[in-house]
Image (cartoon, one colour):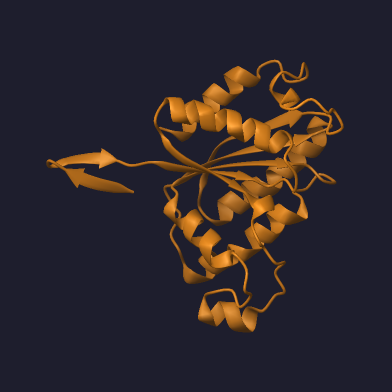
Length: 197
């Protein structure tokens, strides 16, 4: 997105930070850290906590949504579709459930099929992925699922970051200092540099 001011083209970037976790845990901690880094650079961003949204599961009402190009359910789908379309950068952070995204995030992605049916053009936009779990193999599979989502929507994935964590650790924000992710600060800086280019 862009605007003209004094005959100079000024680039406007909005990054949508999407937490796919059903609870306030590691995914939110890492996104709040990213949000603070973006705020320092005065880059417009929004933290979207899916756990706070009313997202009814997709019931495959293709006879309706494929033609009406909207969801027939009285939930937050319309608002979420608008938020996704208005952003031009995306960072998804999510826990890993059985090597896949949790149902909450998948419900959100399923509702985005309306954009696919509308033919909304997301080409030229960039995204990044952060998957968190107990092992790098499972988080890697999870990241592949989300990379495929980006590919279908023609969103360029600039970085997939797979982090190791223990969900049972009670300390808030422990993911930010967990010894299994020694290069986290560098990895986040690299991600933000790539996504803001």
